[in-house]
Length: 228
Image (cartoon, rainbow, N blue to C red):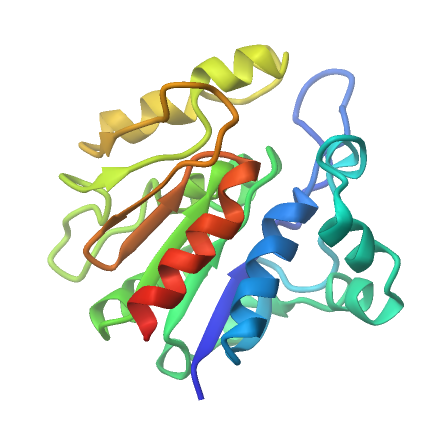
């Protein structure tokens, strides 16, 4: 049985004076979940602390609140999965074939420095598994080092939410850092689509990254192709 870890945030607000709400960008989970489900993969939702994963309010509005996100949001059993996420420290990486980091601006706060997530990512990678992220999920890969001390993203092709997209989304003054710049500073070979907000996903070996919310399905499809 192929098993996939879906990583979500525990954070529900920006660390700005007005404490704007944020959280998981729901469709980035649901689009990938559907792809993995269609392939018969067993899935677990994990977060740094375990327990509830708040939802990003903007992901529950048009045009992001699509059929997939609505179906999940209206299903009590599915929503319960986001109230009872597994704690990263309790997960055995040997049980999983892939790890997929979802986004939402909240992940910028709690994913980059989670030692438990870094351990899971490193061991899944070094066991021959797939490491993937979509949108801001790539913040969860910023500080992950392999057993030889090198950064996982150094010298590898990576995409994720672009600074241009932060500006167009009018959150450039809320975010704690420029994720695109931080990724480049770590030696990643950052790429993005010619136009903002269109689906764009790339594969570099066992690393799969998608640029924005619209890239979740394509990212998951590339993950499934690598596993199979």
